[in-house]
Length: 471
Ligand SMILES: [Zn+2]
Image (cartoon, rainbow, N blue to C red; front, side):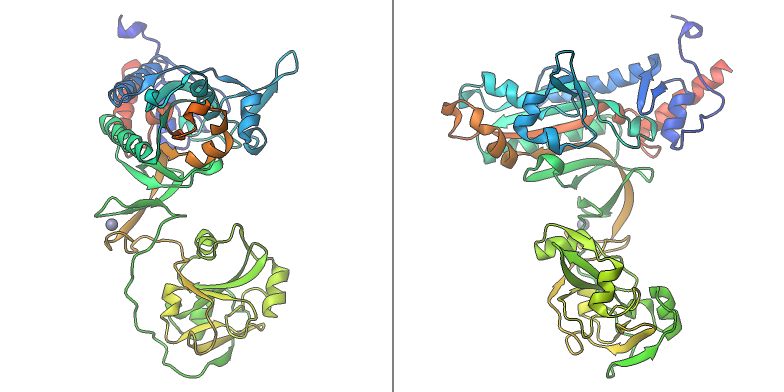
């Protein structure tokens, strides 16, 4: 076919809603057109690109022993009720009724369907391991679809599910799929990291996400410069950091008038001390019990680490009223001295020999504060948010912080399967119990990674080439 007959409508101007370069060029280059919020048509160039990516995914999944299936987009509610996710999934699950009044949903994922498929036909452990995958459209009613195909409501996903006889075999399958993912992303020319992650609403014991490192990504990733360590900033640990000498001499704690000085930077400037000498004190609740948490003035608290350090379920910042009740002072003047609630301090604070903190009275701070001498510590833990330049918890090298765009994830779902679904497997299967883990990779996202990855540069190049050619 002549190029002049090829349907590849290009645009001179970027549409207003396109903020990311990938979104902008895909529209200008005639790859995609938006039909509705988060829902796109793939034009011939776009479809061609997606098909090439699908071919790579298929080849590598088949090489890893996967069998391709195709499950329906429309799923009956019974299976979702059985797994307990019909109520739990939230408004992203598009539920609807058919003409007879039966409940259905548009599949946002396919664990329920694959488990049902397997339990009907897997009769013996000799049929395991079983690795089934599909490449299919999913629908999630995202509240804020954005970034073009990066966060659409309808998107193409490769999802794979493996059934194994025991934990050891499940971990073998896990590694097998990890290797397949590495090959897929390498062949697509993407620079990625496997990142420790939460398993989300399905539960489970082990989970990794594959991220392309890109500043335009929606996730915040800490990645080591020398080893493979990478983690979502919410999970990122911090290696040992050398402790500097305090710039404040040791002396008994002294109250200093600090009228109107609430922000840490203002307090430090007003008192003429380094911000690193400020013991920033916040009041939080852990499962509704108040705690004081203290991090260095230049650091940010990571509430999830506090929650995990104390084994709590829910962590929340205290309300203004509670802060007043607990400290006897307005917000901005909290300090650990004299509090009746447990005090949790970060490692860096624990090693401070002389610092500054709020005096639990309006317009006043303490100077010359020493941990242990002036207040009792309940727990010392890593409770701050990882920052650019922190030591890697695995090797001690310097970590960088970058955006991440999630291209895939996988989890071992043993716990949820045992409690919710395994009972329905044939009794002969009861021992050994089947282990399910699943992997997902978003194909339509993979075709439009953020600008910094090489495949996008090709796309941009093609888009530009076509733009020039047709103008
Ligand atoms: Zn490292």
